[in-house]
Each structure stands twice: as structure tokens, then as C-alpha cells.
Image (tube, rainbow, N blue to C red):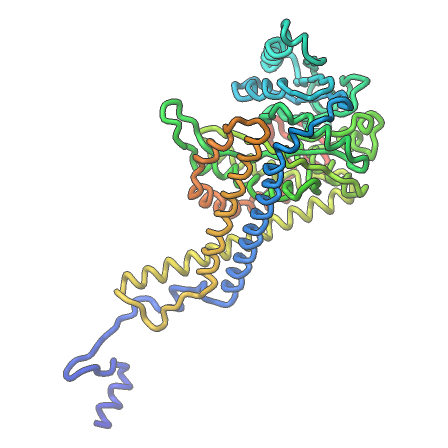
Length: 491
């Protein structure tokens, strides 16, 4: 017996489990090879990923609560509305390029303002060759011309040609041309993108906020993307993953614009300033724009932070952006490259510090999230595959609890994001949207949104790397070349 036992040990044969029978288990792939993500390094990455997800879940919940406060007080504010006597003249400057059905629809919503004061609309095009010029003039005549329009408060609209930009982005070049053309008695200037669908009270809510706070530098709003496609017959959601990847960028950033009455961030698509600050170039804003400016909103945010001035963000200054049925991955890659490119542009040392910090934070948080999430996916997939292969669970088949936590926290975060979107739709309803945004939000596929979120932020570090290695970006058929944070040439 001793000799047989010795031979069995030396030959590493399995021990007998019954009389005349042995239970042989062939391990085709050891656990150490199947699960390299079981190491402490990947476990720490998963816990860090879970922390990011918990932070997002809490932030989206906070944003929802701040917006709900506006919905609760909407009827009370309408009953006590009495600001009309002190309403100031507003000049709305709209850098415009190309006439599309969506853009023309947005222009109409912008012209149909109920602001109690006088409003002039200055549409700025690059040249007379742009088909937007004729389309804008037709929309102005349709909305502001005629006998009915003449009985309202003073409303005027015109088109200005800015020419081609040479030392700044074309958008900033158009904005400055609009400033030079604005009315001498304008009290406020509102810069609007032509893809922003406003509501009748948008101009008044921004002007009211800015007029009521002498220490504020500007007032701003922010969009939220609705990635669904409108099929004329079935009205079903047909948006693809690439379309949803667009939405994930604003999905995170809207948190910074949902802190209550003020924020630290600026969105260039909707920003209102005092006209006198632009006329006398207060705080160097106009100079920073003209001398190589590329990102209008980051320059303004840096000035407000440097001067210790507030940036106001009314709760109802949110705008649903209805996206096309289907985008391409190439179009999204150019979009995210342009969004990250602005973080390597700056007007001064303070602006550079803030923008580079945001660039580093985006890259590091995206890498941490991606490594942690994908290692959790790998571990759970391998665990499930081994159960299927062996018909059970072996003692060494153990899933790290961090992998389960990562998925649980991700589901929680996306659930809270969905609840925040529902609240944003109610904000639009309370502000006169007639339920359009809420019906669109109800068709969003949050499974697609979740997949798109993971893909978008997995690729974001590559966009950041490309920005640090390249000095040029293509935007609207123009190539901008930067040097030391400023635009030096436009091809």
C-alpha cells in the first residue's frame, strides 16, 4: 500500500473517490490564465470605476432635484410675473451657416420671443454666397413682417456679412461682426447658435437673471440631446449607437449646469452678456476673441473665474436638441475631437491652467472607468463560460465582489440619468414646450445609451492624445492651426 501510494503521488494521478473508480477533472485552462483581471491592480481599477459611477449617480440625482424645484414653482412664478416695465433692449446675435429645415425651424422659435422689451436679431453669415442669407431673410419677413407683427413690441431682424476668419474661429469672427452691428441702445447681447430651439420665454428669463444680479458676468443655458429618429409613419426610435454617442458628452456635462442659480461653466450656444462690457472690452473678452480665439465659452468661463464673477444659469434655460435619425462613427469622431481640441486652446495663463486641468481630468477618469469596467466584464464573462463548460462551479472559480459592484453602480447611474432626463422634459413642459420634449424623451433607448456611454468614454482618451500630438482641427470645411493655444492660421 505504501508503494502504491508513493507511485500515485509521483505520477500526480487523481485520488480514488470510490471502489474501483476515479473522478478525473481535466482543467483545460487554469484560473490564473483565464482571469488575469483577478489581480489586485485590476481590482483597484474596478473599485475606482465604481467610485466614478457612484459619483455620477449622485450628481445626476442632484441635477434632477435642482430642476424639480423649477417645476414646482412654475405656476407661482407665472402668477407673480411683473418684470415687464423694466425690460431692457436685447440684441440677439446668431452666427449662421447653411440653411437646413432644422435650422429654419429653430430660427422661427427664436424670433417668436415674448420678451417684454425691444429685441433685434442680427444673423451673421460668412458671405452672400451662403444660402443661409436668402433663407434668413425669408424667415424674418414671415415672422416679423406683416400687419400682425407691427402691432407688437419693436422687433427687427437683419443679416450681416462678416467675411472669412483669418485669426480666430469663424464662429467668433461672426460674433464680433454682430457686436459691431448691434443697436447703440442695447442693454444685453445674447449669442445663440442656430441649432438651438428656444421657447418664447427664453430671452426674458436670461435677461431677468442678469438684470437682477450686478455681480454676475453673464447668463447661460445648456442643451440636452434627444437621440431618436422620427419615422414619419411609425414614430419609432431608430437612432443608432453613433447618434447616442453624441448624447453621452452632454449627458455628463449637464451636471455642471444644474447646480442651481449659478454655475462655473459656460455654454457658447446660449450666453447673454451686458452690451456695455462688450463695447468697452471689459476684462479683455473682445481682445481674447479677436487675437486667436477659438473657444468662445471657455474664454468667458476663464474670465469669470479669474475676476471672481458669477455665471448665472436659470433652471429653465435648457434646450432639447433633437438629433438626426442616424449619425456615422466618423462624424462622431470629428465631433469629439473638436470638443476635446478646445481644452488645448487658451487666451492667458489662467485659461491654460483651467483648460489643461479639464483635459487631464477627462483623460484620466475615462481611462480609469474603461479599465475598471472592461476588467469587470472580462471576469464575469469568463466566470459564466467556465460554469457552462464544466456544468458547475469549482472551488477556485470565484468572482471578485468589485466586478458585481461595478455593474450594480453602472445600472444605478444610468437609472438616475434617465430620471434626470424625465425631469428635464417636465421643465420644458412647464416653460411652454407643450409636451414635445417629454414625448421625445420617452422614446429614448437607455440600453443603447448605456452601450454608447461605455464606447464614447473608452475612445475619449484617444481623442485627448490626438489633441496633444496635433496642432490642427477641421471644422465646417476650414482647417484651424493653433500655436501656443491660439489660432494662428485658417486654411
